Image 1: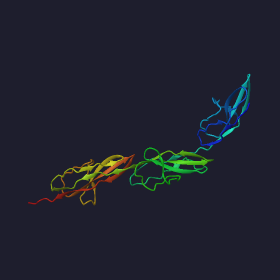
Image 2: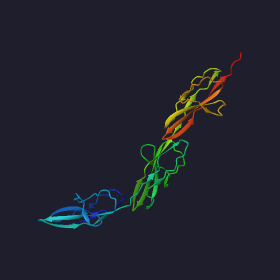
Image 3: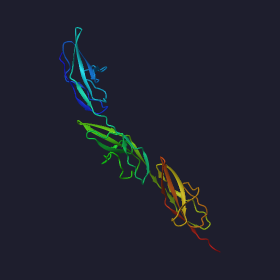
Image 4: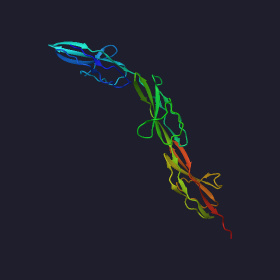
Length: 287
């Protein structure tokens, strides 16, 4: 029987599926030829169940493994066998993406805390990192963000999810693992607009102060009206005035009003004030 060679030697990443192990030339001879692929388990060569073709595609591997093929030929009830050369598939060490910091929620004028990665690979040949982000859809690389942890230089303008790639290259093989994801929720709140200034006589009840533009926020919105009797130097809450509009009682003097808009998202409270309006109260007429 003419015994043939198999190919190919490979280096793969942890849990990666190798390329097909091919036969340069099939075994030949007088008789019926058959094949059985074998795998070395560290002590013995064992048959790979169901693998009896000339070529073989191993499943994903977690450790360096050697393979060979047992070639057999049967003639007149007599069987001869030979083994091919051995092929070793080198499996590189597992690259661990790691665990990122827990999600955080900030107001739109706050800076997020640094996102820290733990339990990730820190050593390896030519190890490097690449941070990625997304607001929706697929992750994209963040330009210049290749440190171990992600420290923010600017406040995100919207809710963004982050993760880190750990990249290790060895024998021209590049292995990549990604960390868990960490989301920075931004509790953006855009203040509403109230209106308008009014002029009333002493003893009159002003018209309802209405909301000309609704408040927009990422969280749950609530309101608290405030008033000032000293042109906005000092403010006090209007008891029970928590609606989008405000109807004041009779005013004794000129009074300014504004509304404190609050948004609560993931337990994080963010606030912003509307514009101020003035209700001018003319003095009483004596006589």
